Image: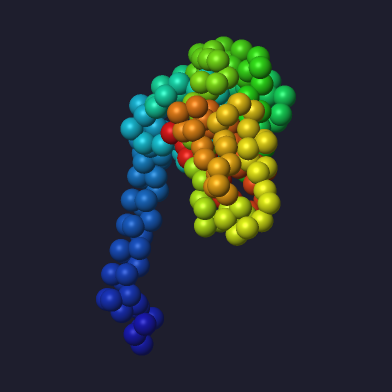
Length: 194
């Protein structure tokens, strides 16, 4: 400030610049949010809040069709007997917390009236594929394990051969049961999302 109580020209410029920056941000923020929502519904960008580590429920349509058709009603979440499906904002499964048990009837699919989840045999749920990390595995360190093989609800998908975990990627439904029970930290077997 000068002796007469006025701001210096540099300070006035900063204040003016800050004012316009805030005004522009206030005007553009709702437009950016609207555009982001429309792009997500069109499947061009991930939906806001979509965690790429979360698995889609069994029978979920591929790509943007799932996000477009899902009404976020929560019926699949309510129908899941394991409590694996949570809404954030789309239905998804965090296999480190609770894996999909690949129920015989897949009640989550039956509960979906919008058609975002389609009936499929549980062997073809196609939520992802299990990937083994030998560097993190207890077997590689000489310890006894095999929990992943025993937890898998599908016969023959995970085998242990010569101290190594072998995953049949073509048969893996990506339910995450192996990831959920893995005692290693970090997890030695995780599901990669499609």
